[in-house]
Image (cartoon, rainbow, N blue to C red; front, side):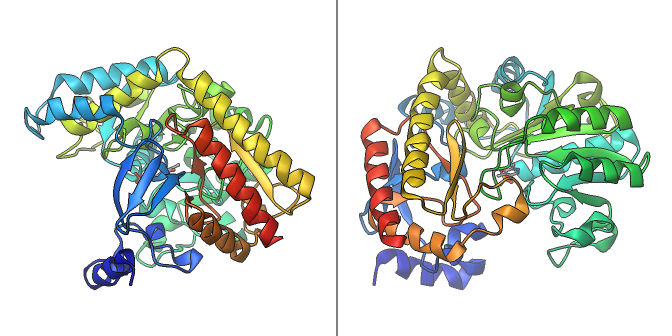
Length: 426
Ligand SMILES: *Cc1c(COP(=O)(O)O)cnc(C)c1O
């Protein structure tokens, strides 16, 4: 038996489903997950010694690729001095200054340990700031596993929230209202029906967790206007898009300023770090300068700050994003052209270095269109690509990421593999 499969059997005795985060288990592609022993640049190596070109990038953080020498060197220097103090360090100020410099709407920031923690805290702050309880999220958007966000998508959710995970109290779920991505009317309706009760609208400005879906022209601006008009806070969940689609995130790309922003993934450079930030008038309400409580034993951890800071410094060097975006846009447009010429029923959505293929024709603009994808066909595509040494996210509804470490050869090889696999599938 393969070593990966042996390890997976062993893991299942002690870890639920054999993993510490569900999608890693490869369930939707009907195979055992690969156990990884190392990564360097654009490549990862599994415990059986197979090498893959990696487009998961730890689900988004690794915009520089694996084990970037400067990040590793900085981490090594910092770790020598100790791993955690639970007391302030200068690194925390440095990364905060860097974030404020990079992200247009952020004037002040609180570091946390995961994207989930960032969104949970941002919502608490929005509720504290407005004195209101309800929030609006969008069908198919993912904001981590906080109770308020695990709300089933569907028409019933438009009136009363319905938990889609056992364990979420109904009393809390009903405070989460669900609107349709790219449909301002659905948001307006919720505002009308819940006058003066909505604390915040939270949105992934580019949806990345139902596959990749771009905001329609005017959608984000429309949300901004509705929130302002109704006295609700606009929260951009940029855990995936932040420092990824643009140095200033999707808000810089589309020129829309949210009140609060949540960040994660790239911000930790591969270590557990995330943040929420925004205008000072709101952030100063966070404890200890204000009454909204939020804390963390390991928040601002020196190692996580070091990896994050070094990553942000590297990506803000002149030319970094131009080069990455050019490469990524070339890759996705080549793929798109091939698919179009062959008339395959696949839609390609991408923004710079994040993108995805939907096994569905005619484009994908919202959750219901995303769910019309042929997930069985995706699973076959995934397995065949893996056999050719291409490691994609094991789900139709996840993004693929291109990093600065992907070479032109990597991308050419991937296109070549993609053409062969698709030709067999269709
Ligand atoms: C990944 C992600 C999260 C959750 O972050 P974790 O670090 O996994 O808790 C939240 N929001 C978005 C948009 C994400 O992509």
